[in-house]
Image (cartoon, rainbow, N blue to C red; front, side):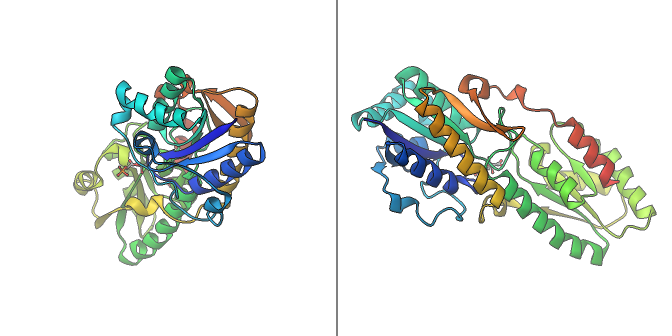
Length: 321
Ligand code: F6P
C-alpha cells in the first residue's frame, strides 16, 4: 500500500496551504493514503501524524500560513532522534514523504531518504527565494507584493515630509526580496548582502536625487546587510535630509497567497507526485525557465550554487538613480 505524509517546515510562507491541498488531492487521486504531520520534523518526532481527509484541505487555498503548523527542530540534527521520527512513520506504514519548506528542511529530508529509505520529495516554500534549483520559491511573489504595498504607503509620507526612509526587508542571507522590491517599487537605493554596499555610494546617489528636485528617497535594505538602525546612523553623517527607518517584519510572511504562488504551489505538488509515481525520490522540485524540474537533494544542500543576481542588481542601480 502507498502511504504518503506531508509536512511543512521552517518559516511559513504564503502558498504553503495551496501546496498541501494540491499534494493531498493529487496523491489521493493516484491511490495514495494521505497523512499530515503537525509541526514539521518536531511533530514527526512526537508522533503528531494523522490521517488527512479531503475535508482537512478544503477552503485553504487562499489562506496564508500553514494549516499543518511549522517548527524548526534542533533535535532532528541528531541521529538518535531521527531514528525515533523515522520509526513513527514506519509503524504507520508511511514510505513516502513530501516536505514543503525552506533551506534547512532539505537536510532533514535528505537524511531520512538516505538513512531510512523514505521516498522523499521537497517543495521549496520560503519567502526568501534563496534555494538553489528553482527560479522562484513559494511565497516569494506574495511577499514581494506585500512589500510593494508597504512601499507605496511609506512613499506618501516620505514625500510629504521630504524624508529619506530606509525599509528593512526579510530574506535572511539573500537579497532577492530587496532587489525585486527596488525594481518593481521604484526604490531609490538598494543594499543587499551579495554586494558591497559602501554607504558613501548610497549617499552620493541620494544627494544627486535631491539636487534634481526629488522630494523623498526610499531605500531598500535587505536584513542580511545588518541592522537598519546602524545603517541609518552611518548615513546621517553623509546626507542632510531627515532619515527614518522601518523594519517591515512579520507582516511580510502573512496574507493571502498571490495567484502566481497558488499556481506555482499546485504545479510543484503535481510534479512531486509525478516524481514519486515514477519511482524517483531524494529530489526537490522547482521551476526553471517556466518548466517544472527536479534536482537531487544533495545539490540543493549547497548554498554557493545559488543563481547569480548581478544583472538584476545592475538594473536596480540603474533604475534607482
Ligand atoms: O526564512 C524566512 C524568514 O522570514 C527570513 O526571511 C527571516 O530571516 C527568518 O525567517 C526569521 O525567522 P524567525 O521566524 O525565526 O524569526
